[in-house]
Length: 521
Image (cartoon, rainbow, N blue to C red; front, side, top):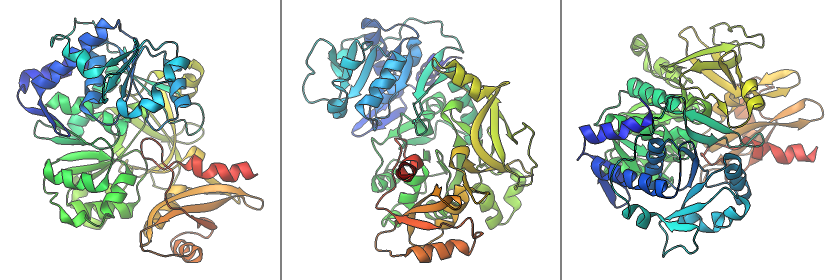
């Protein structure tokens, strides 16, 4: 079943059920589908053909969901763009993907209007939410374009499971971004897996808060539609607005970035609202401190699931869902499992291996690299066969994530290979230090990095943001860490910052923290 069968199924089963809530706009599945069909017809009229690329740069919106489904029905490849990237970076992605049509929110006009000059493949730009009509033969307005088209499904394209559906470019924190190809089979298999794992139904109201250009949230586009659930959309993250809308729209579940959840549970108004509609909150995109997990469960009084995944895997690889017998444990013991990275996702195979490719002992102590295979795993990187061969070996994707695994087969990520700190011959995993820092009453955000040191090779440095109105000294925080960590693991120094740099998906950008120290050497 390619992705072009999911929306027709939702229309067939739930035609008048509310499907989309976006600002003042509310649509049932029939109305939403007709907009998708009109967009399909509009793209066909512009000459877009199967396997060609259409990109979108947009805040979360119904138009973003429409673009996902229109591309899937045409057999075109959608390229979701991180709107926080600079024009030069966006142009590089558009050139690499040879994008023909760019859909852009008017809000980003100044950023992207000149991009076609450096991207010869772009033939048309379709503008949404603009004041006035765009000028120039290359530019079209979204609403007039779709209003002029027939609300009929496009001709069947004969899409195959191995056809590429989406092309996501990695954040590029370690260098030039790579285009990750996700096929119809990848996306469909992942959607079906989440339906099974999370027990998704037509009674669910999913909250699109994390950016739709990132798979922490985008996977739900297809899974929620498949079961006939409701999509509630917030353009950009605002902690207070999220808290208000959980109550107002009776949200049942969402997947948020840890930095978002951290700001929510520490918000002054967190206790003002009713969260009784929530059945589960998921966290993904980066490791999360156990202390933050405790605060989430205390604040929202719902189930919590830690997730782990990659763009290359559609994304989920693990979920910290408790096995039935683990629910007989004490609450504190259950919490320890909920804060782990999780056990393998239903439709992937996962191993933790040493440098020789051998499985490490399931003792929660021996560290190895996570490798995976399954129907959700990318076939490779766009036009990069060498990089594909380096990442996928003998059918296994090597993630670059270091973890331990316990006897229940729950894994806990201890670090990215590139983030592990080697100090005085000892390995220090930044996540372990960060988890201790988050237990400090005054620390709002924390990131631990290795910086060059003439004596130790690398020294452990913590970069922290204090909660408003709180004070703490470097000496106090280092002493706090040494209570629970070996001396060599504790930070040697602390940087106090007003905010930690973030990637487009909201993850803490450690490369940006490290670079100034590397450049000094």
